[in-house]
Image 1 (spheres, rainbow, N blue to C red):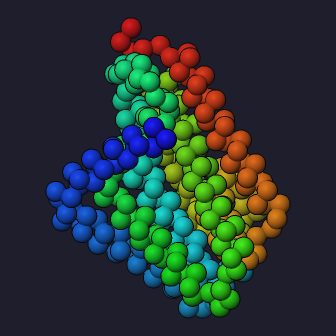
Image 2 (image 1 turned 30 degrees about the vertical axis):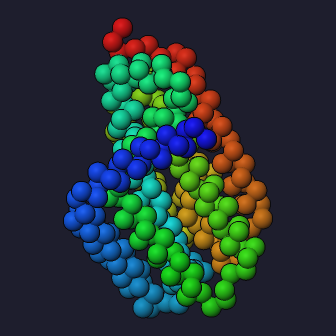
Image 3 (image 1 turned 60 degrees about the horizontal axis):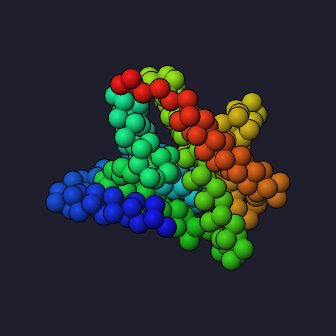
Length: 261
């Protein structure tokens, strides 16, 4: 609870600072609207000549796209700013001061900074997702919505864990730009349902870099055609990755040698 109150303090300060430049938020919202509109228009072009792509109808694909925009916004608003901070702390030796604080160091350094302007993408993504769900011919049941929300939570934790695995490597390898770019390249595939890709890429995006569980699987749940084994596997992958990134962080901290020493 103490950590949540502290995060609330950090985020409140960030929001108050951002409110001093309201025009920036309007610009960010406008750019996000243009970006989402362009993506929707591009998808609509494909559906001018077919009713479905890989068994996905237009409104169903929009759910996947909306989730992609939402989670990309969360990455840009929360994860990426903190990744840069963590690498800088390790490079300059100021990580020492973080580790001396009576706080969970991973929690503190991975969530403390927020880019308020990028929340515009989150709002646009959520709006597109809700709009697309409303377009479905058959309204989702309460069970489907509950499963969808649970899988979205799994998606958040999986995304966080993948990023933390990579950024924790900065304790040994400070320059991670290429590796992070590789991860985000895989994540870009999440704007489409994975089953439209060739089998080898579908397997990669499900079992190697689990991008499928960030967009495709939650979207499949809300339209009522997710396989039960995938739901169970998503829960297992989430638990393993999240516990693994925590264990890896603790291992890295124990073996950390200050840059200032």
